[in-house]
Length: 145
Image (tube, rainbow, N blue to C red; front, side, top):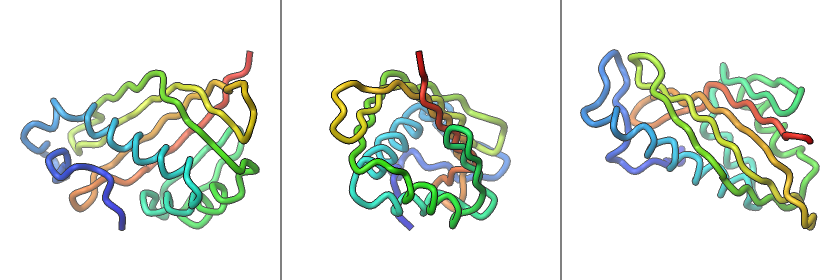
């Protein structure tokens, strides 16, 4: 499985937070977002499947899918050839004692050769597992108007 967080920011999981985690949850979220958008904007979107689990759920616009296979298929089937996500804001909050993190991102998305970026928002629920994180929930919306 690909690791996308620096070792110093990983959370051990369990009921207690790793020392320094509270000060680093924004760093973890930032590292994740950088890795995620670099991967989805690249040529192999299937590489994102490593961060999802069988019980993970994704909402892309109005389509909800659950599980690694369904999420991977959704990502691969997106009708865009070229993507370029530009993050405008990133907010992160620790969520509960398990060390999970809620991440809300807004930004602009350039699709294919379109010169006019589309605004978007995306929310991730990152859950610690075995020294890294997986995505439990992923909600993506384009913002119209």
